[in-house]
Amino acid sequence: MVRIGFIVEGGSEKVIVESKQFRDWLHQNGIELVFPVIDAKGGGNLLPKNIEPLVGRFRSLGVDHICVLTDLEEEPNAQTVKNRIENSNVSFVFVAVKALEGWYLADTEAMNKWLKESDFYEEFPELTHSKPWDRLKEIAQNLNRTGPGNKISFAKKMVKYFNFQISSSAQHNNCDSAKELIRELRSIGNSNSKH
Image 1 (cartoon, one colour):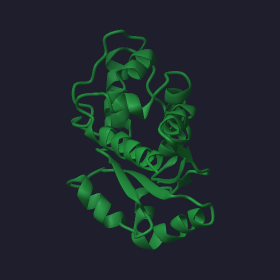
Image 2 (image 1 turned 45 degrees about the vertical axis):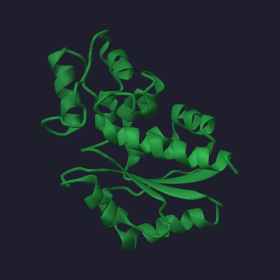
Image 3 (image 1 turned 90 degrees about the vertical axis):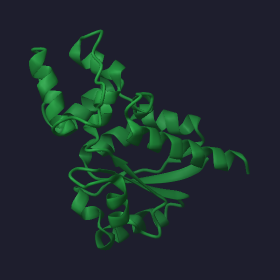
């Protein structure tokens, strides 16, 4: 088993990465998630000077790879974010395009459970006209459903009640950032199984 530590931008990402669904998926792909997932408490804390102490927490835990999960927000592209975060001890930086909530929009099955619908489908979950969080609120309002509430409690609901999974988001035709995360993690797991 490859041991991976995650540093995430915020509380919602921490909920998703620590979820049973994600841990099970990692395990099936030869990867063990090292606890705790570290919440950097904001993208600004993922700058090189701030990330070093976070990385240091994993050194003594025998991790094989350290991964960072953050949002694109208003940056022009994912590479800009990756360049800003680069640290010699970080193996991979994964950037959710716009924000993590775009991945919720891409998990059609979870969205349909949340909305109590059978035919919801977001064609371009990473190209919402505003932030994905605003799009979630707009969808709920248009369908006369209860809105998502706050981000961390909604992340918990998506995992616990609606079976949200990043691997499902990665199956969406237009969710390239989730595809990249799943592809890279599979590659990490597969490289270990060949030894």
